[in-house]
Length: 488
Ligand SMILES: [Zn+2]
Image (cartoon, rainbow, N blue to C red; front, side, top):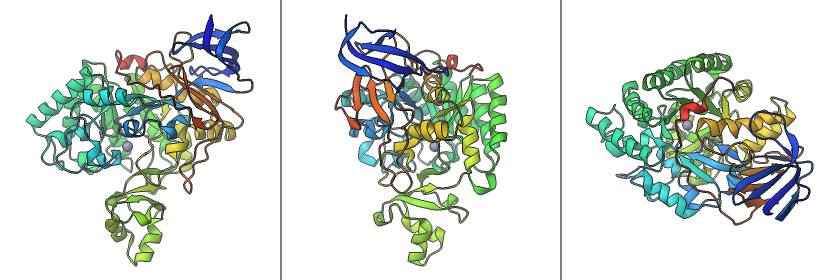
């Protein structure tokens, strides 16, 4: 038979945390048809991949791409990194199900302005994704803060019994329509007033579906261990798996504590399905939070509604231009976004290297001057952290962005290179792959990503999108707790 595509002589790193092996791979009808020695086979497209690695397409488990997959479906910041699937709806904020009464509350504004929230039901979002045909696959969580904004008259208190009932109904309907689970963003003022019981009652809705709970912890600063305990308590009480989002030690007073956090994570994982994601940088980014304004480390402004001329500038420099203190300058910039250089590199490396951590970019596609993780997270792990620093072998780096992620989120027949699986693939040069996006020039495609296939179709080649957009919506499948086990 004549295949659609043959990729010959690649080093196949299959996503299962195993060293690579040389082989040919044939793609047909969107699937990986054959792996092996295929010298006699023919194909419409025949590629010699000698010297390069063929890996499963990367799965970005932590994104805020909810509306951008519809508005800018070419998805170049992700496709150019080798990402073939994004998980949206993290940190308590999702585009659906949402019915806004006014402007989106902070931090839902990270997903776009009011006019972009047009999905009152989860299934409306799902339909819109499929209609937009993004270049990458999309799976989605439902945000706790999004549910709160639908049903609470005041976000700065805990929900009433009736409000919890209404939120549970809307969550249940979303789970029936294919949502992966529930995310929370308890550190943000718009969810901080929710008590543990409010979140637990929502998490209990996940149990019957085998869905997952992910959480941007109530604190990533000094009380981070207590915040992790709250997450584990909710997950155990509701009998659902939990993923700690972008695990970190935030704030100068917290540096060096990653061994404690990782010990707590390991301890919890012995008794319960537990995991985490992280991004490979010592700086975070979100809306500009007055509580996080400090002189202890630099803060860069990524956007400001009243002062767009300050995008990309240091808060310190803005404050001194204006003859104001940092806090007063930050107040004048609101609403705004920021990059906080508030982590210690050693903590970042320990968390990245831990067997329970997956890679998620947490990129913010709306930012005019985004954190470089939006364009660089995955190549940075492959090039800088694996190859250049030797933090872990290349096959472990790949596992953290493919097989591990697909298992955790139940993405069937993806995340590993196997015959019969969907042909989501990335071909890269292990010697050249590297992130070019940095804090000064954050919007640059990586080097060394030579080809990306989504559902069997070449979608990115030679530094360009091919124009083919083959992504689809991926509904939840099966009991997600099965994808957690202590073996990895
Ligand atoms: Zn977050």
